[in-house]
Image 1 (cartoon, rainbow, N blue to C red):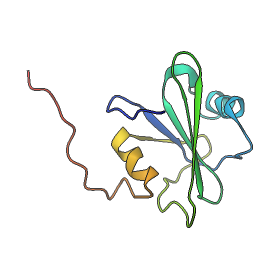
Image 2: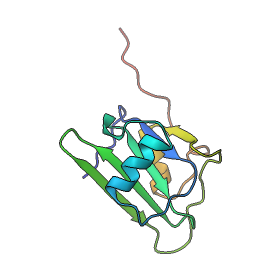
Image 3: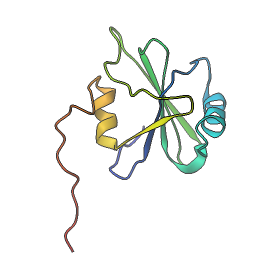
Image 4: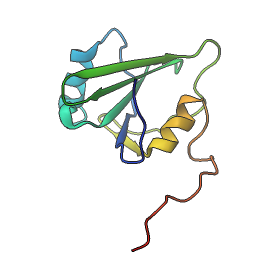
Length: 117
């Protein structure tokens, strides 16, 4: 089970990915196209060409997790645009909104909690 905590770093790969790729193929994509080490614990989010499926790849210190969400109807309504190799950063709450097929840029999220010293 993936835990989305406020400390999670989330990177979305902007361009669609061939979803025949598994853990090794997506990890190689992280290294080669995104120029990020997949073993850093970052949550990498990928989409298919049709915007019907999202895959999340992360490393937990012992091994990789690969999670898939495929919509039963329709398409994901939001995805950032960009160039080859481009990524888009999200915070964990924004990823939760995206996974429920919402638009993280339009969600009325409260401000981040900060401890007052």
